[in-house]
Length: 326
Image (cartoon, rainbow, N blue to C red):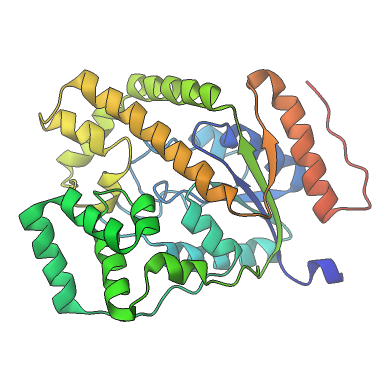
């Protein structure tokens, strides 16, 4: 083993939703002998396929995929569990002679894995936690979210008002330690346990937003409303973290009669645009990322060529690597 590979190699592709990660990741994986590990916090749930934009069974048959469909939607998945499972997969893939390849857009999950974050063991204060739950029930989720904004603005920016469990945990960490959760995360050492190659995809904002809206139209045509109805019929509801995901909470409001269809789709598109903006903001502060601009489908080959050069330069610096242009 050479010095540069004293640490396990890890390839990572990040970027906002709808930027085109899936199609590129399949071509990259075939070229470099990768096995893909999903870095999306919602693709782990069974039965949530359309709204999470999972790679299709046909796409997953091209190269091995991991961390997809591993839990039912009533499971409370966490960044700590993701980190533990992904570490094990990286070890197994490396031992098989493959290149582990994280593809996804959940910033905390990806960054915590890349840099080996130690999640706070701040402890628990059950009476405090119960008091926050009572506050939520009496005053509502917006008031609870505002309480977090006053205590920990950075965490409030990251967490959706309906993510009650994580909001209460962030408040609890600040209460127990006297230090915001965001500060605990900021104090993490940015030293990776891996030989990292981080690639980020970015796109002109107007083009990205257009692609997001088009993707949502396709999701609706593919049966997103029926998918949500099926999950509700199986007993899953908005109290589960999975059902608070963008694409599900908006459609639940429609199905339950809290809003009309047009408004639900409008909110879904708006919330997805905002999520894409938050994703880009998160990844922009990860300084090790090498960014590649995606213009439209017309420059797919150019983008692929740039990414191949980045990966080859990192992991095969003395090899000449070219790809065929279509």
